[in-house]
Image (cartoon, rainbow, N blue to C red; front, side, top):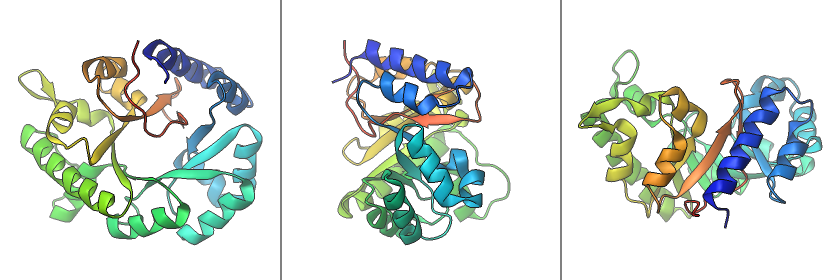
Length: 246
């Protein structure tokens, strides 16, 4: 098991590699991960992928990536076949563009183990029919936690694991020294709800992601380490791992 120091050191290497604009960061990052493969969120290369799906996936493989976190822009079957040709795996899928039930079907088609909400507050806002952006109050956090529990149980019944992906707004203060994200952690069932902790967005929200690891020693997370350019992200190969320990 990777310890906390190794985790933080590896994350620093990830950010440094991309911030220097290395032509082939994947190879360096793969080396830094001590034999574990690396994944990249397909959304991060979406324009290139949509212009040239096969060529983009081949390039990702060539520079050292072994997996992608999927979004489906055509059909899951098409993406599955493209990934097979490129030699890339797909352990995780963001379902927002599909809906949850179609997302479950797509995850099975792709061979993914995780089904992830990119922005659950936005999904609930759209369902409510209310205009504008979602709000991040204490009541909102409790409502989102309840929905996350429901999704987690449904995913479990389908043989998958549900994970919540954050942006910066989840680190809004909701009173008593707690953030929206703190409420999610406290009021979701860890048997069914996992967290894709986006370290870059946590930092943008004014929080230290390492502090969340330290404060939640049993936390199961999917780690995403940022570059210094907030528009580009990479994913650590380990889609679910116990909290790093000393």
